[in-house]
Amino acid sequence: MVMGPVVVVGDTLLDRDVEGMVNRLCPDSPAPVLDEMAHVDRPGGAGLAAIFAALHGAEVVLVTALADDAGGARLGVLLAAAGVQVYPLPLAGATPEKIRLRAGGRVLLRHDRGGGASEPGEPAEAVLRAIERASVLLVSDYGRGVARQPALRVAMAASRAPLVWDPHPRGPAAVPGVHLVTPNEAEVRELVEVPAAATRLATANEGAERLRQRWRAGAVAVTLGADGALLSHAGSTPLMVPAPFAAEGDTCGAGDRFAATAGLALAGGAVVSEAVQEAVADASAYVAEGGVATALPPPVRRAPQAVHAAVAGDRVGVAAAAAVVARVRAAGGTVVATGGCFDLLHAGHVATLQAARQLGDCLVVCLNSDASVSGLKGPGRPVMRQDDRSRLLAALSCVDAVMIFDEPTPAAALSWLRPDVWVKGGDYATGGGDGDALPEAEILRRWGGHTVVVPYLDGRSTSQMIAATAGRGNAEVAGAGRAAVSRRAGEPA
Image (cartoon, rainbow, N blue to C red; front, top):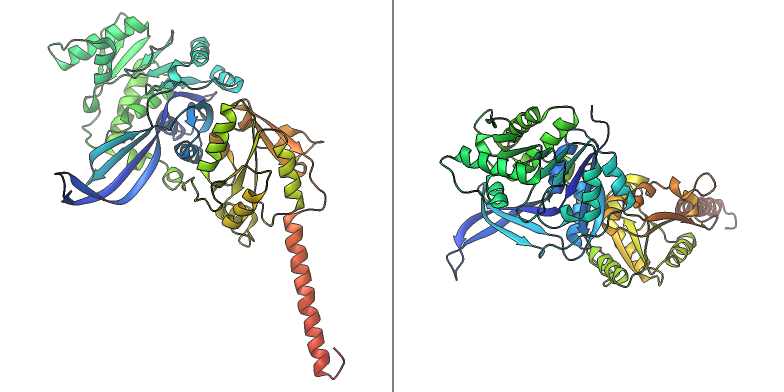
């Protein structure tokens, strides 16, 4: 029984598969022309490993770095759709992206963008507490800096939970006490510069043993693709775990699947050899069943785009919010955010927004999209479309940017935005104005933010305005009907 959360630590990338058809060559070079037919976005790296863990029904915490850009916002939406709790670290620069151009089930080209690695910011106390109570720790290192973060490394080294480390040649050594390291063949050769031996297994065994001794790891499992994995223990003959069947197909994400399954098995009480056997079987089945294209849960596949087109100059949309937040953070200022439907903007809304803006150096409004409002309020809402609502909000002097989200709650938007302060009107407070009653309070604690409630003007409510308008309309209709009857009866109107 897994008691604490599965905590995944590492670099998350935005992966995109572009599917298309090739019917011709480029006229100015002998290169195929791909006509795009569809594309699918998904979290890659540590984000994909976290989704695989969540598919088993575990509580999953992902400690990763998210950039202030559209890619970071998209990752927040996809991870929230998978049920992963994101504990974000700030990340300067752009979100790393890996784009695979595919035709006929084969990859024609991979396009990487997002620049080089950059150091993530410091973790909040809530991140360190999550690591402390983990049932298992999985480091999914893609060489971009999260696994090097000093405070995270200290916390992981102090943890008594099983620790699985999926390494990268550009990444750091595992922390002391690691239970299982899971490189593939190419990675182990780079990590220890092992020379080629007489056979493939001999090369893998030599590399695993050298890496185990160098990192003082409990065990090293070298994954060998369709041939399974070789497990090196201390003072024992290596264990060769063959794949249960030959599996051919897209291997993208197979290493993440292997590491996540091994970690869950260790959390459930399995010994290392049992965990590796279970991981080999699961990774083989994953490839045989279609790989990442079929393994992602439907909510992730259908997750809507997080970016909405600007309708009010440069103050609406993810790009607008990112620019404002980056400018304020660079100056050492305080980022304030608030959210809601803001259907039929009224004086109560304005009072809340003005009070919120006074708490920091910028105010970003997280606005429920039309689909989100309809799901929360019913098919008759919103009265005003999201383009009009965002335009009105952006026109207020107290609002610096507006970003629109499609989900029922702003959790995904907040994980990307990471405001220092989250504000709600006083009608959300319970028990005498306890700010922790806000559902967003736990999310804000993940990066050290906090929630506050500001006074709300009594008697101002969108629902009351709609009801009052409907009542006046009905009265006017009834009055007109009575007047018509009076005129037909020869009475004065």
